[in-house]
Length: 132
Image 1 (cartoon, rainbow, N blue to C red):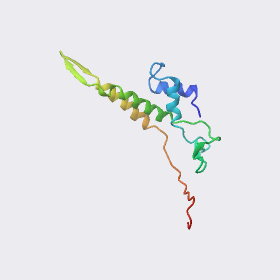
Image 2: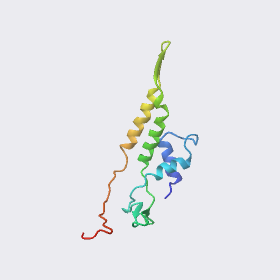
Image 3: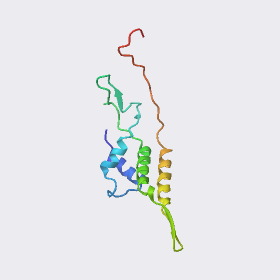
Image 4: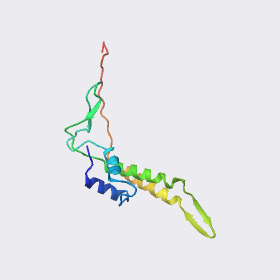
């Protein structure tokens, strides 16, 4: 599972981070890889291999990621920096610093609203229970 250079470049454009100053390619790849989704063949990125192994990578899964969810996470993180900024007025000038936070959160909501739908499959597992 690894994000491609093309996916990283697209995420950079989505979050308005054209340089490596704030987010390295490795950082953005981490955001992308945190949002692995079911591929075009319906294969999950992970599968349950039993009690001793737990969840393991699915070797038949084709790398497929939800870039909108990754972008929303980055925008939310970016919003943390100006969150403590405040609006002020002095000598007839007005400085609306809170608009930066509001803009970042608006972008996060925009991308969060476009994320892939999530579904969960549940399988009953009865290990060691007798009489069932």
